[in-house]
Structures are given as C-alpha cells and as structure tokens.
Length: 230
Image (tube, rainbow, N blue to C red; front, side, top):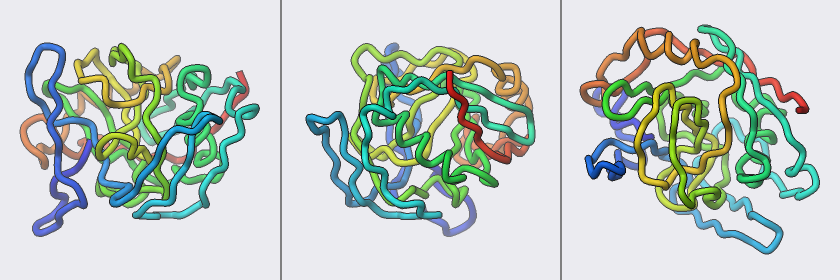
C-alpha cells in the first residue's frame, strides 16, 4: 500500500497502483514505495536479497539461511494501542519470514508507526516504514512467495510492495476480510490482538489519501517487536 501525499507538495517514489479484487472492483492496492530501481529473483536456495534504494535505518542485507528460515516463530508487535501477535508462515514464505525476523532482531521496527489505515473496500493497517511516509525501505528487496491461490481474510499479515518482486520492510495486517488480487505475499496469521486491530479501525482515519484511506486517528506506535520460538 502506498501513500500518495503526506503534506502539501510531498510526492512519494511510486504512486498508488490499482488492483482488481475478485469481484472485479478496482481499489487502491497495498503497495510500498521502496525498492526503486531494484531487481530480485528466486534462487535454487529459495531466495535472494538484492540491494535496493531507499535504505532507511539500514541494518545490512540478510544472507538466506535455509536451516534458520525453517524454524517456526511468532512475532509480537507491542504498540501504543495494544499487542498484536502473529504466527510466521515459515513453511510457506521462508524468504519473507526470514527477512522479517532479520529486521525485527535488529530493532528495525522499534519506535516506528503504522502510517496507513483503510476502512473502505480494503480493510488493512500498514506498517513497517521507518520514515512514516509510505516510501521507505530497508535497503534491499526480495521476491514474492506464497501467491498461488492467496486470499486475505481477517488476521492475514502480508507484504506491501511497489510491483512484482519488490518486497522490503513494509507490511499490512488485515483487520476485516478483504478481497485483493493475489499479488501480496501472505507470511503470517494473527493469533492474538485482532481486537486491537478492530479498535484501531473503529477509531477511523483522516482521509489523506481519499475517502476511507489515510493516517489512523488512533496513533499506532510500534514500541518493539519480539520474536518467540514456537
């Protein structure tokens, strides 16, 4: 999901793209303005992380470790509105879950905020950008995974992107069943805190990007992200 503007005259790197839902209705898609000018592709080992811009709060570029990537874990986002925990789908999206764990273990998401909430057509909260603009990224990109037959029911955690194979740090959490084209890697499932997401959604947003699409009225500041073995 991309931000269009945050203040007068501020243009993000990539504008809002459109995706067709399964009902055929066009809606602003979960996208991220990172990974401009990057390329990435799958490898025999499972995935490749490719240097890309921007590199906000740069923590290095991970080197995929299949053995570590296979280990199950859960992640807890401690936010100003309450805790949200999800189980990582390490068996279905190992490249994505390995990247998320890499960043979380290096405090990448700490003291950031969720910058976008959608309450019409799409029902997601978007986070993971240390710049808070919707255009930030970690300094690398990686390929899509787990897209065949992908659906996005409430509790899905998935990657935002700026097009195919441009995943970085931005992700979204679905707070109500939503319909999207299968273009956003699902990599987690909320196990607790769905009520927190629904409280945030009920608080509304400021329509910065259009009706039902803007900055959450209830500030969602991520204090830290804790990784637990499961």
